[in-house]
Length: 300
Image 1 (cartoon, rainbow, N blue to C red):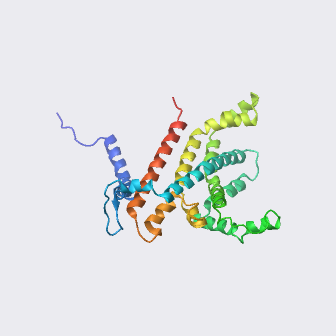
Image 2 (cartoon, rainbow, N blue to C red):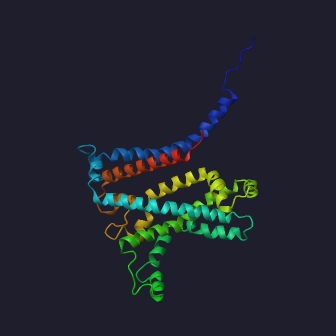
C-alpha cells in the first residue's frame, strides 16, 4: 500500500493565502487605529502634563470632572444642536436632489451632478474660510443686505452666538449634501424603472410613488448615510475652529474642538482629561450608530 502524501488541502492553502494577504493590512489597522483607542482609554484614567502623567486619584477623576465642566456641557449642547438641525435637512435635500437628477429625461445630468457634488471636493479649511469672508462684518452678505435695505448697518454674524451657529449649519449643509446625494443616486440607479412604470399604471402619483417605493427601497442607503452623518457631526471640528474659533465666548464650540484645546490649544497638554472626553464621544457615536441600525433594520 502506497503512503499517502501529507500536506495542506487546496481549501487550506486558499485560506492560508487569504490570511497572508490580510495580515499586513490587519496589523497596520491594529497599530494605527485600535491600539490608539486602547491607549486613549488608559490615558483617560491619568492626570498631569504629558511628561509627568500619573494615575488619577480616584481613577474616575477625569470623568467626574466632565459633569462639572460648563464648557464641555456647552460643547455637547452645540454639537447636538448642529446634529438635530443639520442632519435631517441635509439628508432630505440629498434624497430630493438625487431623485431629481435621476430623471432619465433630464438633460445635462452630468453637469448638474458635478455642480451639486463640487462643494464636497472643496478643502475643509478653504470652504470654512470662504464662508468666514462671506459673512464677515465687511463681507459680501452684509454689503448685499445693506444695499437691499434689509439691514441698516453691517451686522456681526460671526460675533453673535445664534447667527454664528446658523452659519455653521448652513456651511455644513452646503458642504455635505452633494456627498450624501451620490449615495442616494447610486441607490436609485439600482431600482428597476419597471417598478415605477407599474406604479404609474396603478394610478400612483409622484408623491405616493416616492413614499411608497423610493423611500422603502432606499432604506439601507438612508441608514448608512444617517450613521455617517451622525458620526461626522459628533466629531465636528474644522467649522468650529476655522469659522468662529469656538466663539463668541464658546457659543459655537464643539466637542472635538474642546478636546483639541485640552490637548494642544491651551498651552498645557492635559491629555488625560482630553482622552476622557474623546472616550465619551466614542461611546456616543457607538450608541447612536447602534440605535440607527436597530431602527433601520426591519428584516424578518
